[in-house]
Image 1: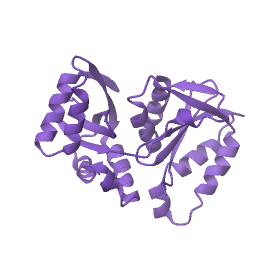
Image 2: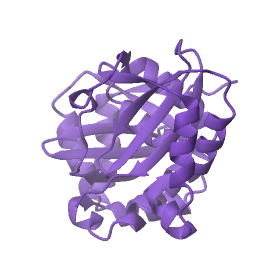
Image 3: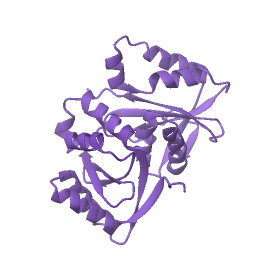
Image 4: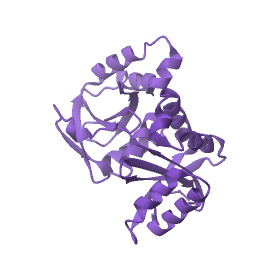
Amino acid sequence: MEVPDIVTMDVGQAVERCAQLSHSGWESAQLAASALEQYPGATIETTRVKTASMAGIYSTRLAQNADLPQRTFDIGRFVQSLTESTEPFVRFFSVRFKIWRILVVLSDDMRSPLAATAVTGVGQNSAANSIGAVGTISGGQALALCRELMEDGWDAANIAVEKLANSEGDEHPVWIASPVTLARHYRERAMVTDVNSRNLTSLDLDRFAQVMSGLDDATIRIFHLFDDYGWQATCAVSDDFARPLGAVAIRRSTE
């Protein structure tokens, strides 16, 4: 039986899971509970992801910026919990409370809370940077396309899915792009000689360049997503929005 990617749970249950984490000293879980308590009787969507992928992305985020612990709660403990987890898949939901965005991770069956972290970040509203855009894509459609990429092993798509999971009602600007131009641009970025440096500042850079160079499409569509940890994910889809093609994530300079 196929396990659904999206499963809803009652806010009351989510608050209980957050309370369990809070009692174990997770400060971020208390923030999540405070946010959820404003919506009694509502439901919240949980998204299924590979545990190793989420652990890897947050390990990279933590390694990329020595100042990150100063604007987060529980980030080190969060990475450790996911890294040590024996569960192949987990579920997460994300909520906002005041200046914080909180991510709560549960077991795949949603019975056990595993970890939480909160960040006050440098995210941008993609709609505010829409010069040259030729249209928009709904958050729901973007999420479905990025989830396909995530299932195909694109780590950068995990960043996109996490960003989109709680914003399905939003619209995101879309641009026309040439695969040849994208391949050349990202191939040049991939020519960094220090592999360790490149791995801390990008995800799927080489793979994205290779896929773009192999496409027969004359034009495709791309959209950008900005997360609270200083990363920009770029997702490429076919002109008719029917096929997800690839994703790449680049750490943005915050200086």
